[in-house]
Length: 471
Image 1 (cartoon, rainbow, N blue to C red):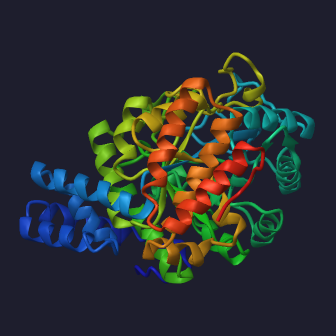
Image 2 (image 1 turned 180 degrees about the vertical axis):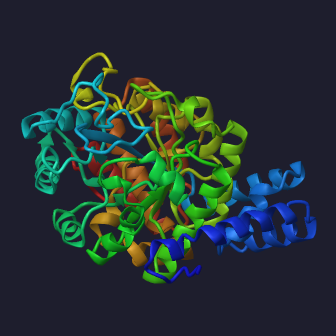
């Protein structure tokens, strides 16, 4: 039986409910009155439920699709302004005991060299990332209780936070590791992680078990209920996502929104972030084998619909996508992107990008400076801010501020100040010029004169060597 408040995976992600939703969507995709009513509800900025959003996904009316895109772009501006948060993944180890059919780290893959960073190697990777200008990392590691125990992850996080190189510092470490116990989530919380991220890959239980034939990840129930355990362990910022292309996208879209509804219903706070990766080519992996490829057009529509269905959540896109696609979907809802990413273990310390240990092919190979430059030319503020996390504005506190729009009073000035740090410490001359012009323009968009004056004062301090100023 379907119940968003249930703590049982097969009840809050209910196969029967999803199939009935898809049937309802097919029956009503041309019901323009209903479609108009759903769009009208979306304009209230309170979100949509999975059934309403699924009707819009099924609707093929060009005029209505354009209306959805325009609304998504406006809602994104309302909640997140023109800020784009920057981050980079840091791969600690590709040792893994799982047999996932879509991941090159699967234990049967003898073509890929196995590597695990020592703490000294982690320091070198972090210094390389700091020298690029990054302040926020997403730690990645395969599931292997022998090579990658929780103690290794905890020690690595402590190492990352401890490194201060020149003006560099990693101020937020998000963690993307396998589903684990409440006790281990408590340990992660204690060492100061930001967001705990775990992709479902697919919400279809039958497909899930087929795609994960061996290893602890085969357990659909344990994996799907991980976010509830994370929140029980005190982690109030969690990030969800599916790997589009593994299974039918309409099923995954519905399941993803049901998961968000479940977290909101049970914990009073939905996902902090939603990621939308697509299956990509990698060592020993051919994405065409899954036969569920998602067109760029439908991918854009899904991003737009997630934005209007869950307006408060951050949305993440990685360098899996090329510049052209990233440009299209940023305006439709994306609020966080990676830049200068290496998806291999130990890749940041090497001059040439290594491919033998990559988890997936990187489609956007630009440097962080090039990405920052591009964003600013497109009218966005690249933000390296981590203030909310360190000020305790997480979980329900962050969501309350976000839903009310008050978060902009902090985020906009903080984005400006962290961009200034980047420009002073790391940017090329062209990027500095564009950035300083953008900062002057954005200061004028601050509503209160008192805040404008304070921001200018803080910017002057940054130019004179002070770092890590925030509201």
